[in-house]
Image (cartoon, rainbow, N blue to C red):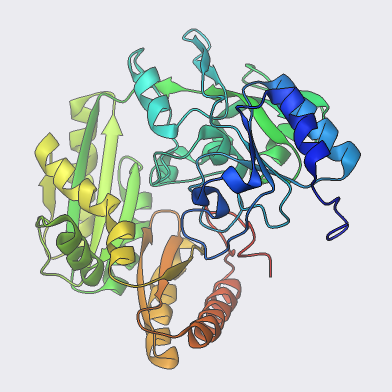
Length: 434
């Protein structure tokens, strides 16, 4: 026994092959290195076996066998997580759900989409847009699976106006640890029938059950969209404007992002493409959408006036596809650009009340001097979710581990003192268990 788990052996391999077939049950020595880790975390561990399930029945049979024989199971989608949540820390079975990637039903009358957990987020939007419908959650990693989004209650840039994944899940089919199958929720708009077990599963990161089917709520597709790039003299004045913009404008912005000059310059170098403006220390990026051009124009004109009153240096209007692609491709490249500028990094994705964003980011700046380490940040100013990146650069292993812990301890303590939480959208996984 290892950590009270059964040591995986050839009889277990044979049993799993009997359930899923030999081609979709991969033994330890044949598992690719990509399955040893997730996207960002330094946490690595090799599973004893990789099982690629294709149906709810297979998932249930695998879980029933594992439960009976006390073998750990790690469910996994695309592996794009950032906290080690899909790493098989105790070995055992890695249950890959990416082959369960089918659209099952688009119900235009009820405005719902039923699908399997391995469908990629980027394919959901394309699929429903053809019917004039819209799936609002917009996490930055579009190659993530919808099952992973549900398991972490993923947020994204449109959360200011539309909310997070939990707000768009109507029903779930879930396989429990013992192999039992539960159906939670459904297509109904209202439900006061006892405990909301569906909402307990969402965000539970695979610890309570494995999502094998989901019914998603859709909205009518907004036909018009516009973005504003707003330079400010400094970060505090930019962040201070955010509550006024959200409270005072005629329409709630779809997204409110903040960015600093250092990150923009890194993105320019990474993409070999100029940002529309890089002369200011801080920027807000606002997006508005709506059913009519008039609705969107009224919204951005109102927002631009508020920004200028709050100290903005200018307001750049992005109303063409080319301009939007220039701005948003740079915003989408921030993470990769920061990663390319260093040898290794780790991320803190705390969430704090909106009014405390500037205080928290300035605090993170001060930690650079305190701990003699490089730190970069950007994030969702509209919902208080910050992405703080601690960069290793040339530090040796021991120094890196010590400094990383010290910086994270300071960041989490500061977030707690401001009434914040340790994760806005990436989850707990392994990295945040302490």
